[in-house]
Length: 516
Image: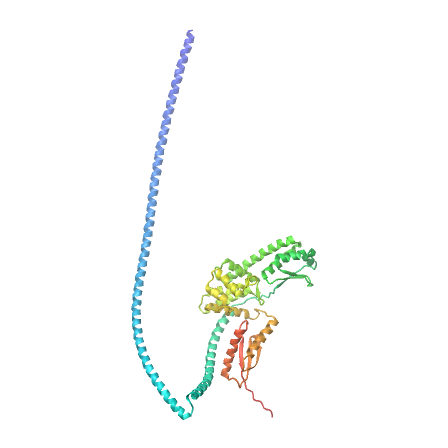
């Protein structure tokens, strides 16, 4: 029994000791937690204070920055206002000076008007006196010559007309000779310098393309069973395929050079691949169209860069590139346009005009030819519409429309474009003409000259570049021969179309012959 109590007492003491230790541990933890919480709160307050100070500093910096900006803007505005006021003061001064000048001029004009009025009165009095004297002299002359006033007047007018015609012809010949000599000398100088700097290749193409074949067997594959291959090809390209007796070759015919080039590339791809059937045709034609489109863009961009005219609207560049596949009288139109641009630019430089604008007008002068095969209208009309659509300079638009005299040229650059176009088209080797067209032009040229009364015979020589006109010497004088040459040249310009210039030579000669 005593052991039990001892055990109980020991247990109670142990429990009490353990409970007290737990309480001490809890109190220590609470004190530690309070200390940590106080540290955290202290640090948070310090961080908040630091951020607050930082925000205040940033706000002050932003305020100072905006204040400086506002001050700078106010200073700039003040400076602009001062400059405007200075300009207004200067204008007021100029206006004041102009008003003084106008007052002086008005005074001078008033004085001169008074002088003119006085002179008119004096002239009127002299005219009245002169009229009286003329009437008196006419009466006396009628008595002496026994002719009435009307008869004497008609005879005098006839004599004056004959003398005037002769003197007018002599004066005209002198003026024309001097003017031609001066103009020809200056024109030769400019054109010689220009042409010496130009060297262009000559391209000769037609409305057909010949595609060589590796063998005659390929013709059968091109045609296909019951002609399905050739029908599919013509439908996809819009080009006529001519398979005839020409050995190892077929002919592609179309007026549209771009379509013809697509067809040529597509057919060559089909031949090289060896597989020709309708499904393959559509695929290859699409590839060929993409290839030709790339070539068109490249040609247009190269032409613009080569001439050096600055930025051009992409659609104009693309249309310009289509001229790479267009020819006129055997001359590649894109090469011709670049050549015209270089010639026009050189002449503009000689005449102190805007070289870049002159080159731009010249490069685009035939751009309508890229559209004329697919749209109605002349190439000048279509070119003007395209240039207007993409806001080209009015000088460029006028040059496009006036280079074939469809409209009147209203500036010097348009005249230079026409001249450069004629030079490029008429230089040796630039263009070729058919025999039929050549004969017709020669015949028309001779008929125009023969239509004049005093002409006995006309001969076109030098491939139509010159016409020599034989006249009847008893019906025309040397001075009148110059007038006749000018009249023939004007009629040729009005009725004929021709490249370059035509020289008109009038020959008047008298021959005396006898036999012994």
